[in-house]
Image (cartoon, rainbow, N blue to C red):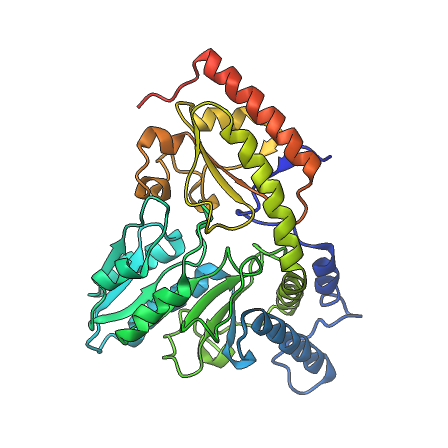
Length: 389
């Protein structure tokens, strides 16, 4: 068993060996290294074919047409296209309201704050105590002035899964566009754009055992094209210029194909390990789970160890790699805004730790984690390592 035990799969995943093989085949002179935009020789043709195959693999995972997939640098860029790009494309329109939630990733919240400076009204909905945004909540704030609704499919901190199909139906009933950040859910939750009336989806590879630095933006056929955030060359139907990274794209395609083939079996195994961890931790005094367990990613568990200084506790777990929240905000000393939105106090938010399991998590690792976490928690409570507000 390798130490420290990695239980931070929500931050990023190791690249699957099968994906690495696919990527390495696109790097050397003997492989498919050409520029996909080179149309005058076989090296370019081979690279273009590899890109087309990957585009098809990504489209297949979500039930899309290949012509609806636009390659980007990751889900953050996709989110910016969906919010900033859509807002810029509708500057002269009458619809000036954008609706999102207070528990979105910063890649959604920050562009939303930016478009406020452009004259758009942004509504940040508060979730219920389970971390859910219901269609009824959306119905209360949406109106015919709403341009776009952006709600993530699965939360990166608490793993709660939103009912995107029903939420998108509410948006459509008011003539609004709908975007969902699916960075955490793709490959772990069934996504079918044929039944989900969404206009835009954000996808990335590194949450599903693919490489970092590559993502895909789903744009439904007939949906308004966002203004490009990156210009120059007109690649990807004019929405994202730049030389296509063949090796990363091929890796993302392979990762998504593997996720589609193995998702059902993998989810059952990971969920069983997650539940074993949850049962053990909830037997400890003053512990509780954040967010609903009913609608939740199979590998996510966010636990409050009430009264304990979470940062010190996490540092004491030196042989277990975990986090107190999103990797994108891990340097902040402020309590998690996601947990605060659920109604947790500053002290409880500071006392919470996210455990996220994945493809390579073993039962031996979970047994080890249970033993170390339990003993260290009881030790710190005895020593009085408590969080002071």
